[in-house]
Length: 205
View (cartoon, rainbow, N blue to C red):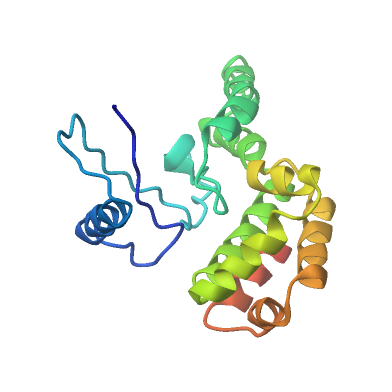
């Protein structure tokens, strides 16, 4: 038969080398007694999940990956593009229809639609969470995801799609902390590296 197989790393800085991922996949297939007779296509992907937001006081507008719209918790972006793209385009069009407005003013209005104060704060909180996960051991990471995916469906899907309002996002993270086993709790509570700085940026917006 023809199958699609994938070896991935959730998040790592610096990223796991492609050769290491390929070797892991080959070993995983061999362990299960699966022989590869032909490779039809080989794909290499790298999603920048923890980039800072672009400067929103500049005239040059960005969208998609150029505007750090990749979700820091999932690596997904298409949903955000579909939700925020129409308003972004409308803000640009509305500004350009007003000749008295400068290009700086048009850009500022468009940036505000693309990255509102709430979205900026949510992004900061997500980056804080990603920084935490990258410090977890494999066992702690498994325990974290066991807890996460046992939260109510609306909570974890809203978290991964970035559709939870800020207050609900904070409540979701608090619920995860409450339900998590102690190794996960300690990993989430004890600050390390730049975690507090990321959290402060998220709160400050």
